[in-house]
Structure formats: structure tokens, C-alpha cells
Image (cartoon, rainbow, N blue to C red):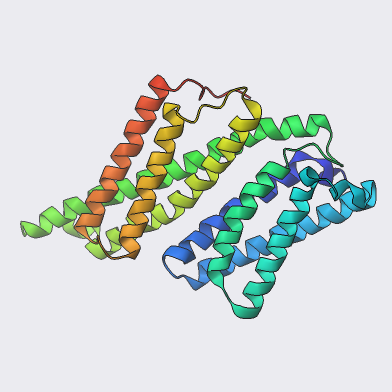
Length: 277
């Protein structure tokens, strides 16, 4: 049972939660049955692991370990997930999985960093430190997705110009169709937005617990949330059909320029975002 007392199981649950949010977000924005199923199954796996951890904790330290409000966060998350899975199984409310994931992810991330039965101070400190690496890893994955989305947008504009000027060359075939390029830059943003959301949630939780003073008006914090708002606006424009094709592509390029500008400026002026555990 050493595995249940190690930090690995908590990291696994956080990552499963994060990817469940990614796939439920894809289904939320662009109705996708496969993504919906994957999100549901990942959340079900989280529920199974959470149930095992809860049963193990009760067997080792008694039911009283869940009585106080701090320790009660863990069982609170378990109840939310249980109800979400049951309701979705009975009446098929797929969107419920997305909203449940976001709320549960936030509360669960907080709960695992609170000392309680079954967690030594050493384990809690280890989780606090390693949470930073998960935050950074998810952020890099989001940045990677946004970068590829930007590249496909540039390819879209290049292809658009070639078609407008009626330059029928080998480049035209190699770039692919406008429809395919548009689908690709939208798809990578579908992955990038929830990855960045989960990364920011973990980052805020880590900074609030680990740092003596967490400055909300720090350039890195403001810039990161502004970037998330920009890409969320992109998703809204796509879903509402207010922007499409070239207009949506140009807006996506603007989003990436904001992302790049935020990375450069915040690294110059940020006061606390120096990575240390």
C-alpha cells in the first residue's frame, strides 16, 4: 500500500483530471462524441482511484479523519464526481462533466495540499514542490498547442494569398486546403485553452500556498489571464460563428502575438515568477 501513500497517486489524479477537462472542453465547444466518452471514462477512473484512497484512509485512520472542513474537501470532491457520473449516466448531460471537472479539479488540487490523515508533512511539502512542475508542464503543452495553431494560421494566410492571386504552384498542394488548415488551428486551440486553464488553476494554488505574498497584479499573472481570455474569446467567436475563415485566422494570429508579447514582457517585469520550489 506504499503507492497509496506516495505523491505519485496524487499527481496521476491531477493529470487525469486535467486531461478529462481537455476532452470535455472539446466536446463542450465542438460537439464530439468520442471526446465526450474519453472525458467521462477519465473522470470515472479518477472516481475509482479517489474511492480507493478514501477507503484506504478510513481503514487506516478511521472515519473521523474526514470530519473537519479541511479534510472534508476530499470527500466533497468525491460526492460531486459521484453525482456527476450518475446523472450523466442516467440522463446524458455531457456538459455537466465539463463544469464538474473544473470545480472538482480546483477543490481537489486544494485538498491534496492540506495536511490530513494519511499525509505526512514531508509528503505535503513534496506535493507542494512537485505541483509547480505539473503547472509548468501543462503551461508548456498549452504554449506548444498555441504555437502549432499559429503556424497553421500562417499557412492558412499564405494559402489564401496564393489562391487570391491564382498562383497555381506546387506550394498550393503542399499547404493543404483552407478548410483543413482552419480545422487544424481550431483543433490545437481546443487543446490549448483547457490546458492553460488547468495550468493557471494549479499555478494560483501553488503560489497562494508556497509564496509569502501572492501579487495578483504581477505582470505574469495579469498577462497569463489576459492570454486565456483572448483564446477563450477566440473559441466564443468560433462557436457563435461571428468570425470564420480568414477573420478567425487573423484573430488567432493576434492571440499568439499577445501570448508571445506576454512571455517577453512578463519575464522582464514579473516580480515573483522565478521558478523555485
